[in-house]
Image 1: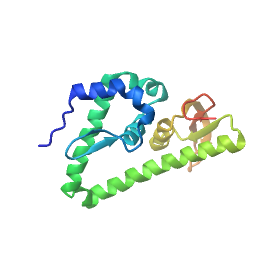
Image 2 (image 1 turned 120 degrees about the vertical axis):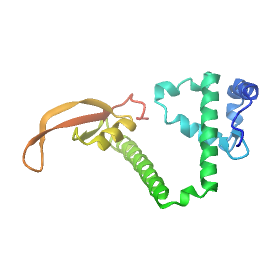
Image 3 (image 1 turned 180 degrees about the vertical axis):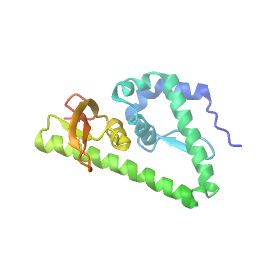
Image 4 (image 1 turned 90 degrees about the horizontal axis):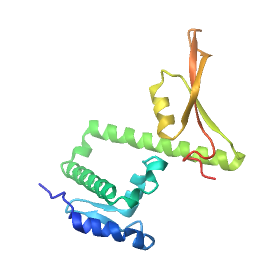
Length: 181
């Protein structure tokens, strides 16, 4: 069984001096490693982007949270390396799930790019997504991308059979964490 433990003292020391060396680190700087995997600065930064903006602020100021995040990332990468070594990524069912996750991520990146282009080109003051309340995937996409639920428009749209249905409205406005001007 591989060793996942990180020397707590070594990591806490590294975290204590991290703000002093932050500018000296490159994306390829290895923050923590074991015999199976390593976690680089770029991977750590990418993981931080998953956090809401208000949690991201000052995250590095809490050594315990950074330690726990790096340890979790190292364990996850080590298990993934073991799965690859065992050939699990070659199984058709696993390959299909991996492909779906890549598609989901790429679609989110494309939406972010379209949002940024709309804000830049049209000086947009708001970007909105309208969806059927029964469409759980659309609601999750909007929420995952940082859109705020503004409200429910009752009887706003027609269903294919002619009935009425509600519409949810999500939006991004200047000041929201996702909109950078």
